[in-house]
Image 1 (cartoon, rainbow, N blue to C red):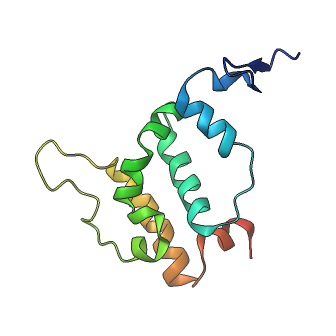
Image 2 (cartoon, rainbow, N blue to C red):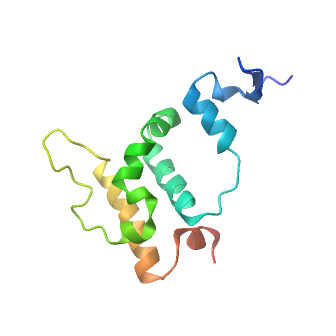
Image 3 (cartoon, rainbow, N blue to C red):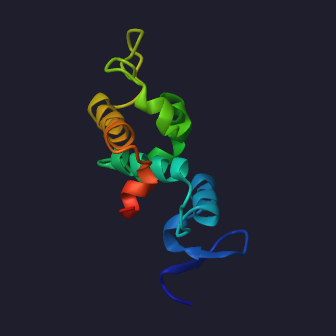
Length: 127
């Protein structure tokens, strides 16, 4: 067997990086390496990749529900309606997402939906 493939404790062969962590195993088995054609799922992937900068992917996976809540389930129509203060904390000590990265997500959606009348998926594949 290749050094890049590892047999998990469940007997399934996977990429070495999945290890034994349940979040990584689920991601590997259900998402990783599979094409994404749904606009909402593609938008989520693009956003999460942007938020990963400087963090481990496992950290992002574990915070995914928080990101989904902050970005209206990654519904581009809803995010396009966000105003400048939408992602700001409303209570001391509360932090939804990194504000600069969050603003860039809102800007991406705003440009694609309002200026080009396109979905994020259309823009990503050049349609």
